[in-house]
Length: 321
Image 1 (cartoon, rainbow, N blue to C red):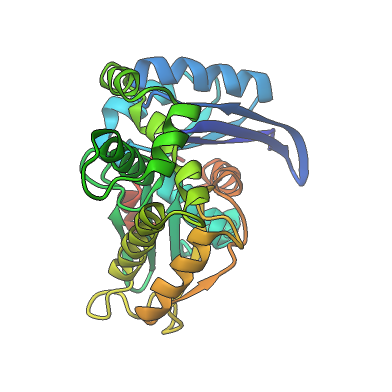
Image 2: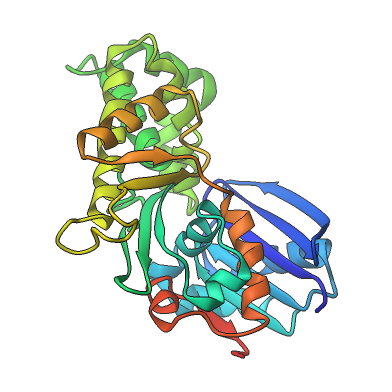
């Protein structure tokens, strides 16, 4: 088999890796923010694939928004990629495969088993097994969901800063100062957000400042604490005792992946506490969504994933083996 390429696309950027056998041929990161739309994103992904391996035999693209927008997003992405076999799926599948360390063989055999909470620009939990089926929670996008994710934290932080600018109750002078220093004056920030299609990435770019401020500012700490509670609720929904309690054989373990929850950070500690309050524990992820995309690229070049897993993750493959 020739080279395979995995691509991980989120609101804050995209990464790719080309592999031939056990050897990494190339790896590239293109920072965002990224506009999640079919036509414009397709050309950028195609360019990234060509830069990694123009002779790729199989390419797998895990992309935020695929589960929501379906063919309107997945078809332009697949069409833009120059490879005999192209798979496009929700980034929750690549986060699941990477976080649990699933190989191509495991994906093809039974789809693996476990639960992953992916917290980046957005927020989504995904888990299951061939015995229970697979399900997701949240991942509804920054307008109506992704509670506790980077865009949610950034928006809540900006809102708290604007309250301070207005001298309303619940505002934070610390966050207002950070907003002015890192983004701009309130009036220019609002205008910029209104006119941008990649506003989720712009909102998420402010999240690190909010998390950083949580160590010294009560209002920022409240935002981050609420974010941890939302993320824990999302993970718990996948492990609902009435629906999927056997997903991890009763262990209640959740692999947390994504750039938002950094080990040793304030949010990581609050999330661990919030999960513990719901009877769940954090496990270290075995890998990243990019690792999962590479494993998926190798898998789809050889066969079909379990139908329930493919459906749950909005996976499409061109052509299907």
